[in-house]
Image (cartoon, rainbow, N blue to C red; front, side, top):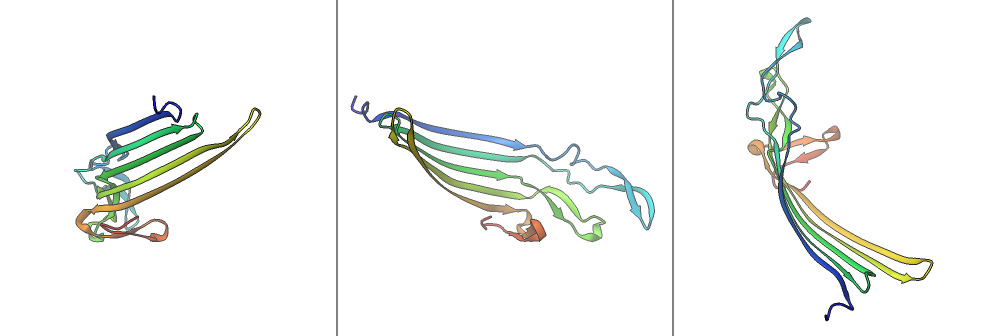
Length: 170
């Protein structure tokens, strides 16, 4: 009763889930032969270097949020917090050139994303034929590499401009 003149809507949201990224390619974990091999100008077959333990990336995510509408829905507030952890990240890692290959796809590490989002909508003036509304939102996200294969940092991105290391923000 006390909230009826002020509070029009209020809800709390909570979710948790685990998903996988199966984009590892068909048979990428199988050793196979490529017919476009070339050795000293002579065509032939060459094996592909594969990692037999290749698996899906796994993402675990937790979200909590709240929605509140006040004063005949003229003021609405949405607040969200999320915590997302991805493990078994897929990446093409460099291998010693002496192996006869330059890269191999592996599950190389883990990363986390944590943050919040806040949105405030207000109907400042409401008339018969028009209304004046305003919206404000703010968000903050922290992405961090939590684990790398063998703990070895590396460069990636356009022109190798991004240095990736354990514990660092992305």
